[in-house]
Amino acid sequence: MTYLHLGRQSKYDVLGKVRIQTSRPILDDEELTLYRAQEDGSLWGRHPDEFFDPNRFRSIGPLVIIGDHVTKEPGYSYPGEIRSVFWTHAGERRYVVEATGPGYSGMLHIFNGGQLLLPNGVRLGEPK
Image 1 (cartoon, rainbow, N blue to C red):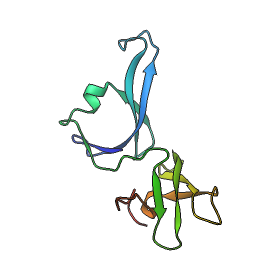
Image 2: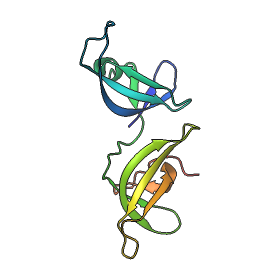
Image 3: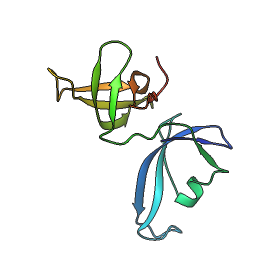
Image 4: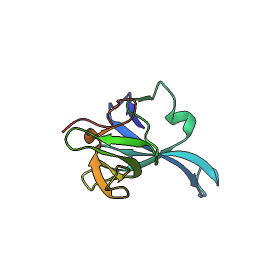
């Protein structure tokens, strides 16, 4: 899921939860929300009640879960399931999709979000 920081107007992708072990003010074994800056790929952690504060961050992108069905459009047809999401060194998000179509089922291909549609018609990124 992509979020906009309302103060800075910068975009972040939530990666999940992280449990922290530390002797600093964050308590041992405490869970934080882990997120990555789209601008430079830097990783950040914040208490969930701070991150999901609607006065601080706002959701602006679709939630993608491993196993979600997608279709590659436009161009050739490539129905499949998301198997992985990663970021390039340039900070661009990519999706590994395992094909489910006849004749090429199981083949893996990497796409950018602008090439992929969820079943509800929502595109994962800006078309390029």
